[in-house]
Image (cartoon, rainbow, N blue to C red):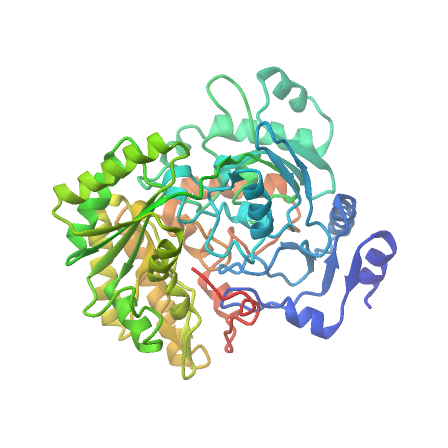
Length: 545
């Protein structure tokens, strides 16, 4: 063990490892990158996190920088769960439900808890956490908070941030703070503190005041967006103040979350599912826009394109047998409603039927859970694409989370088809049609120099395409290392400069997950690409997207 590891093991309750096999295991996540950490820490509790942060801060004061990276289950596709310093692995010990309030449905949980386990527990109380990502069965709640994750239910319920009431956060110097919406009087007390917490509040409050004009450009014309830092709702006109939006979606670059207080919704397993097929993208977009314009929002408006169904049919001809048959439509929509009351659900169902009828669209309507599960295979078939290998060519997560204004959805899809055809790469699309948020993963062999060049050319052309349509590089998977080089283009240099100041306020020595979000170039990440991309971490659970 190194001197650092020996010191940490002496002072922490949890375990510290430096073995080559452990470090090798944590050198990859769900992304195309590889970075080998120096030390692996399994924090037993918040105090372990605090002591580790304090230790790295003290070293940084003496000029030695050792980064800290918080890690859940390693499913992150942006490379944010990697670091060359200390990897803090939360699922081993900090995986508890601390408290549940049966009257309000509010739950307090540690970051390492498995999202699926939390969801199952909530179901037993008739509640659920709606913005679950596709990977919820094997990812952690801390990872979802770090990315401000979303999923199929986001179209109705919003993203993770909408459900976070408060957080306990370990700052870069080891101080522990609790974030929630402060009154004007409470903010005044925070501003008067002589601690690092007080410095943070004073600096952020001043920055927001000085950047009011610049931050007017922060909101994009999209339904969801997790690129950058969320500065929009920290300080409200009534003077209330909440740092929570900054930490949610910050990917461990501003502080390390040790506990979250989370609001939930009423869970109704009795849903109604519609499946509709469209001959053109234009027809599908028209229906989606009509559905979103109605009073009662469906709980899911998901899509797959014909190219994905053709690809699945080739990979596994029997996977969709009896569910959907060739010739496949250009677009297939799956629309679900889950209203808690029978009366409201009947109203939403009637509304959806009316939209389909107005657009002269044929549809299947299903309420039987077993038959619904069969129909959902259409959307979940994307797992076959994500996990498939064609020789050494594999589905590579490099351009899989763009989101554009809904009115430009057809234009977006058409341009993506042209982009892939131009680069001679097969394309298959799936995702959240209700948010115009698409996923796609080109088949490439990263062990080949030519394919690595194609990968970065595709990234550049794709993200510039998304931005030209008024979109964002990330609707739910966040920036990480992958999309960080494009963040300045998303908002412009003035907003990016504000983001940079935020990062330096919270992390003056650069110990909190450096190389993620801020100050990252394409040249920086090119040297991190692994040539043997696999999904080894995920095969126990079946990768989903």
